[in-house]
Image (cartoon, rainbow, N blue to C red; front, side, top):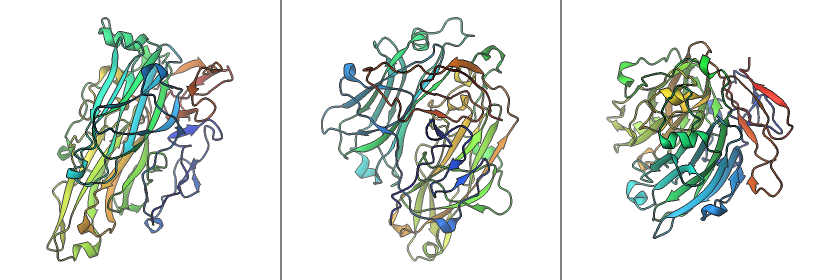
Length: 455
């Protein structure tokens, strides 16, 4: 029986200003609470999990001029496809402060199917432009192709970066996007079939860093396809844990060695804090199918994907394989040549947003933020697995001292004018609890506040 009712754990990665507060215990999907070092959920508590999206419902407009304005917060909408022609929805976002960084993430999970069934579902297009169309700030595309019966996660993070104070001659688009106050977000779909996909839209705004001239330069080289040159941090017996069903109820784990169970067709999500000045390793160390699958007469096989997401939910694997990995059962033994699969997070620095190459097929600058980094595992829905869960062994190591944190003292977000049509005010107003970052968004009040590292 599917587990359909999970309480959202949004006081961790997502800090609701009301009723939650900074420093509150993290709410878990099983109804318990935990502090900075949560007690792991045991494998005996395993239930099947459905991927979910959460937020204030909003309807994007098919016309640019009627696009709803999304305040910083979290929203849900529905993406549809047409049998002919493109389908497009538009939203607007606005800067609160000059010199801030705007990040807009659009994310959803398409239904599980095979490669043939997914071929005509309509590809995705994401774009962030200035509202007058004068400059393109971010643009990405996603395929809807499911090559491993995975139920693929689609989505990108669109950026409007502030001007780099060290850049003497930025390009025209970079300069325009760095100074603009209002932007247009487009989520498009190509012609196809496949019905509706629920999407989650997160709007984040980081206030300008007042100490930017004192912060270290960004890393000049990022890890790429270097897993075989790395050593897994696994040590000792793995601790059994149960992951969340989505990014909203991801289960928090620290440095350590773990084992979790995943049913065919599922995705499970964990999160780990990596602060400014720190780096991390995420290693998938072993895969153990159910004994009944190993003893089956037919040759069973499975597909799987480990993935890393930054605090802005941009995918940032250092191992850039786009399709799934696989394992086979031959002679009652599991055979795979892939593990360990080690993904590396370079040192998190504020100036990575300007100085560093992007990670994972030119997608992510998310490692310019301290906060929660997400580790996800997807298991394909192969019939030869007979619906039985597979054990995934993994390990995590966070290294380095906290340093190079941005500091900002700004006035709180001004109240919205009546009749402004801005969505989300008074409902899902939230800040990302960056745990070493400078990202807190509060509505109303008018009082000044300092965004400093929580100790």
